[in-house]
Figure 1 (cartoon, rainbow, N blue to C red):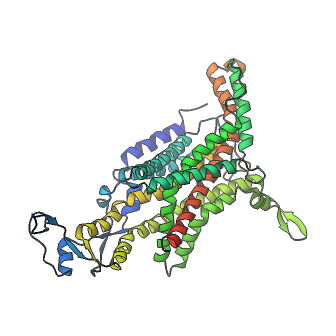
Figure 2 (figure 1 turned 120 degrees about the horizontal axis):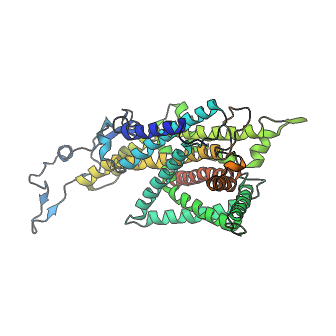
Length: 474
């Protein structure tokens, strides 16, 4: 079993690049400051006063003084004041002041390097043929997925710490909803939802019992299947809570991006496909309308036609998920610009209201949109990065293929081959763990998690679409 090899050298090179390249050439910074995104600047106090026909007060605070005790009076202007917001392309310097920018840059740059390492490793393993070397790129994918969950947790924690309890209540409500939904899906027969959880857990339990017996421990298994389902449901509820506000935000950006894309049918079609893609991916695990239909396509009175083999269907499903993730990445800037345009929308909304508004409040309203850009970018990209890396893990650990090989490859868990005299206690233990965490176990749990991530994002986005289009305007 080789560890110090081509993969190890490639991993060290990628780690070195991750440390040295991003300060000079960052993919995350390029996404925001490549000249395609524009931000809006608020007018100065002097400009607003001139438009309102009012002289800017002199003094340190630039505020009027009342006669009763010299209490400061805020500077206000009419809400229907007619002016246009200036816009300018976002520069790399502008991004440094954004909230959550370090977290955004780290996650995107790390995920970008992890993807490059994984692709290079897959090419290397394809060209070098079967071997027992550990797939080190899976560690990168696992870390990228963990960092995505960490970023989503940080954003959810931010909502929980708000003074207004509305966001906290929304997260708790969706967590409870997704917990019930997860428990419901876990009891559905494998004839309808083909995750392979039951088969994978059975294989895991048998391997665990044998492993413990080899270590001199009598046991009927680590946990029961019901306990396993409960733990998985709790984790799924947590993921549902993390996806709540990203889904709501995606729905709003989707509607705004469609409005901005009027007269561009190709972009509108891509936006619609992007929104519906998680649902389409989730349907690929519904056996009667996906696998059974593809493997036995009815042809009228003639015999059914098999479009793909069972392995080919698994490969096609992986490619569909990858395509969905890359489509979302390609449409990142369209959604980010739709969010930045909220500054104009807020201004048009207050112009329809009577009365006056404080100058500082108006300026904060415009500046706040740009200030939270990285928060919105994390809400859009973190779920995408999570789904993409879980899919990579599903392919490699679950023993699937990209469809480029004559036969599906075994899982990327090294197989130990040694004579009786060469077997050491460490090798025996590692071999026993291989039987516990088998490809069947990984395929079952990672298939379910991939499906669940898509379901959570679509359900929260669909609710957000209904909320922003119907409830908010009612």
